[in-house]
Image (tube, rainbow, N blue to C red; front, side, top):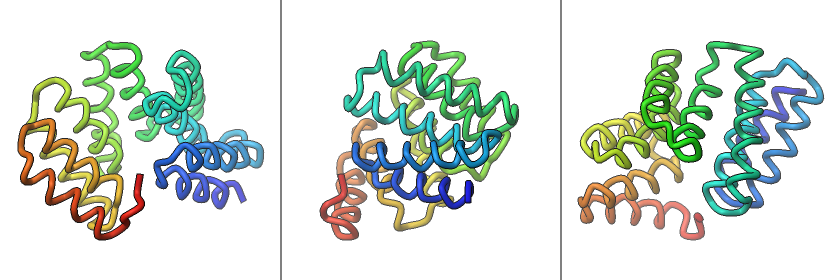
Length: 186
C-alpha cells in the first residue's frame, strides 16, 4: 500500500504542475503514514517542495526548509539513497548557493545510483548554470537515455539546456518533439 501510494505520488509529480505537485504530496504523505520508514516517500516529498519553490508556487523560504527536512529524513532512514542525495544537491545549489557542496552531492548521487535519471537530469541544470555546457548536455542526454524517448520533462529540459548553451536549433528540435507528443504539457 505504501509503495502504491509512492508510485501515485511519482505519477503526479511527473505532471510538472502545481496541482500535480500538491497531489503528489498527498500520496507521499499517505505512503509515509502507511510506512514511516519509507525513505523513498520522504525523497518524493523533498522533490515536490523543491519544485514548488523553484516554480514560485510557494515561497523559497517556505519550500526549501520543508524539502531539506524531508530529504534529511530520507537519509536518516537510508544513508545511501541517491534520490535523497539528489534532492539535497538541488537544495544546496539553488537555495544554499553552496556550489562545491552541491557538485559533490550530485556526483555522490550518481555514484550511488548511476541509473537514476533525475540525478543526471538535475546535475545537467547545475552544470549549465556553472558554464559547463558540454558536460550539461552529456548529463541531460544520459537522463534521456535512462528515461526513454517519451519523457516530457527530460525532453523539455534538453531543449532548455541546449538553449542555455546557445544551441538554439537543437533546442527547438527537442521542444517541437514535446509539443508533438503532448501539446498541453507545462
